[in-house]
Amino acid sequence: MRKLLILFVLTAVLNSCDKDDRQTEAADCAVRMKELYEEELKCTQEDFMEVNLYKGVYKSEVVYFPMIMCPHCSVLAPADGYTCDGKKVVFEDFREVSDIKQVYNSCSKSYVAE
Image 1 (cartoon, rainbow, N blue to C red):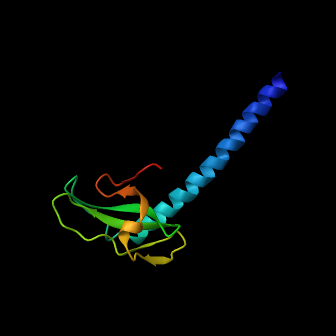
Image 2: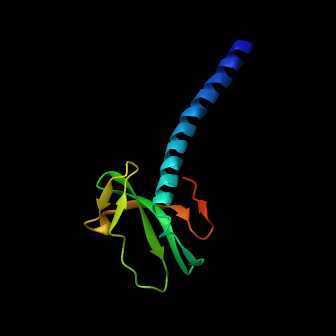
C-alpha cells in the first residue's frame, strides 16, 4: 500500500512538471513580446484608452500584436505581429486572425493567465 501511495505521488509530481514547462514556455514568449512592444503598450485611462498585448492565430501560426482598446475611437486593426520565433507576420486581412486573447494589460501592468 505504501509503495502505491509513493507511486501515485511521484506520478502526480511528474505530470505537473509537464504542464509547468508548457506554461513557462508560453510565459517566456509573452515576456519577450511585451519587451518587443514596450514602447507601444500604454494606458491613458483604464477602460477608455489602452494599448494592450494580444495573441491570436493567423494562418496556423500564433502571432502576438498590440491592439488599441478605445470604445469611443475609430481605430485601425493591427497590420502585423510577431511569432515567438521573432518572425514578422503581415496580416493580409485582420478578420482572419482567430482565437484572440489578451496577454498583457498595460493599465494593470500584469500578464493575463492563460
